[in-house]
Length: 292
Length: 262
Image (cartoon, rainbow over all chains, first blue to last red; front, side):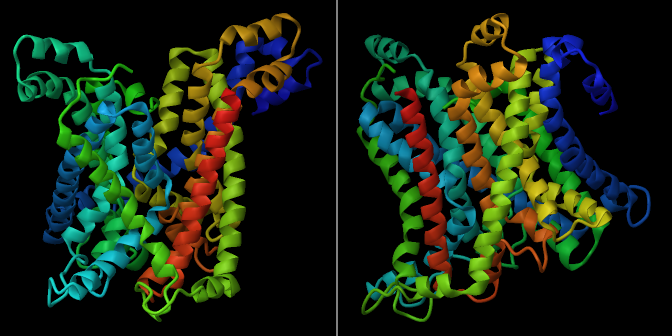
């Protein structure tokens, strides 16, 4: 800061002293300073606490093999894996439909995909709560129709969490899947058909392999988001089924066990960043993020 | 885009079915918010606006809405200024270093919020900024920067860099080139970024659960408390209001983009 202060005090215009590019470097400065002090610095604080409290060393990491922590990790991995698999299958169907629809119909389907993306995650979790409770709308309807006698257990379990999470993650899967499928050359399929492949063969041997990068990209993205998800699992799972994010929040806010909480947070972050780095080697990020 | 061959007949229906699964469950809050019952359920005898009356006459809910608005507006302003300037800087300098900066600025989108929440909770404890407007605005503003960087960078990608150089050669200062040439051309990107940043703060729960307690009680936190303590149909009315606000903002964004494109 002192350097810019000194520059400003000089009579010559700023851009003469720094050169035009130097001025544009100053443009970047506020965001970099903000992120460094109020994002990255506290983030490193979490890493630090995980090896410094309650006493220095890797004691917190030894807790990874404790039964409670292991159960949380397994539950998180299982729910995230199931969510990813279901999301990719359903998302694939939507992306496939999108590339085959007329432009007009495609716009409508896109609207249906994008709207939920921007609606409050709390509002959506609450909507599922209204639907899935034992005295909720779904059970009331089924009972009124005489299809069931006793209410079904649709939430406070992994089923409820998975339903809510698939619903949340679908748009994040559909967009990269669609971006990938849009790039597949239609003439390749026409050629396969022309050479005598059935529709199914053309799909299985040509289209599906070409859409694999989209499947991998979307899958890793959904899995990463699922691992650290808090709101939906907490609302639809209650306190019985703990995923890692909720477990961390209980460690810190209720039990004030900073060491354990920070260790779990570090593990979560390491898992997410590793997966992201792997993904970056397979898929072009610009296509995953920027483009739609 | 060229249309692929017709595809399979069933896949389109399957696609629409999934889209119905995406949209329909959300709409359930509308009839539930109009219920005449005392608990969370569909209306039985007639529709009733009692829970909207309850919502808009409740001091607690109104104060939460007000706080959320103030925080979201301030956080948006912070993110838009910092994010737009940074995106323009990275775009204009355009070296490997700025490319790295741009990637680093996207990190908050990837690191799970819970991890950041722990970090900022600890920092605010140390600085005595827990439960303050400044604390929440800074945390929301900083985590909203990536949205602005993305939308503004996208807008800049379609903007001819030679226009800026022409303006400078014709004697415009950096500030004039920025305000008269660059900003008007990337305005849709800035507006989109602002709307996304606003929605980010307006809906944010996890950070607030950690760094706010008595004084700062934002709307998401009030909803969270309601869900965990007593679920009553007022919550459905709140959900409807939230959804309507989001829809209005997105419509605004769309209208803006359309007008800009002519």
